[in-house]
Amino acid sequence: MCRNIKMLFNFEPPVTEEEIRSASLQFVRKVSGFNKPSKANEGAFLAAVEEITAASSKLLRSLETTSPPRSRAEEAAKAHARAVLRFSR
Image (cartoon, rainbow, N blue to C red; front, top):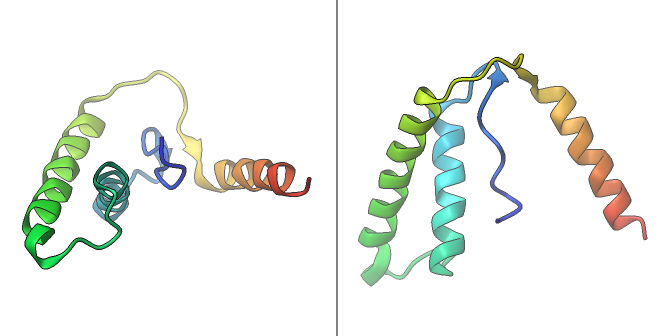
């Protein structure tokens, strides 16, 4: 999976539509191989982003869990610690 796509479920405060759209954009970029599509492909590219955003929003609204919400600050600190280990070699 693309490293730029972050987990979005079970956070406090809840995920925003902009965060869902950003993850959808990263997914479409990864799948298509385009960072910025040509004019000929722009319509299909943007339609795919919107469809994936809608599907992701629906999924996140329907998921349930009994675990407590994660803290964004704690998750960011864990990611930073992993990056330090990965890139300090």
